[in-house]
Image (cartoon, rainbow, N blue to C red):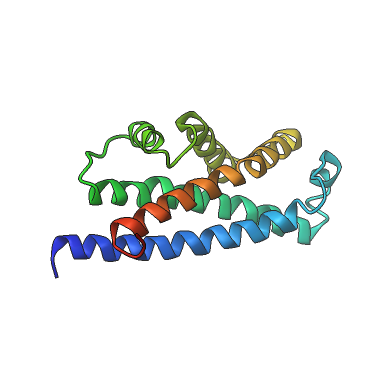
Length: 161
């Protein structure tokens, strides 16, 4: 098996993971935001176990998908195309030039949201509400990016013409 074959196999594996992560995130997003998320609901998180679990699941799935796409799938796709990988913002700028992401600055905002929701403890209920609603707003951006990159991978590994 050649190095190119190994890379293609890895990209197909990551593609399957990303497709699954997007499906799970979309389902959770639809459940959590079936009705507008309000401050009143956030204030009830400690008493509302089901809502609390939806919020936790949404934040986790949002973070996981963003991380898998930005830190794993994009660098592997760049390697397949023999592009020099750099720091995250440089990779995102390059992906924007390819038309795979709409705006690299928005992706950096998504990354900051991920860090805020996963790595920081948000004490303010209003901050939590704002972060969750902003993440919800970015779901179409994530979906579009995933679709663009997966299509490119399928073309490059010969699954579609």
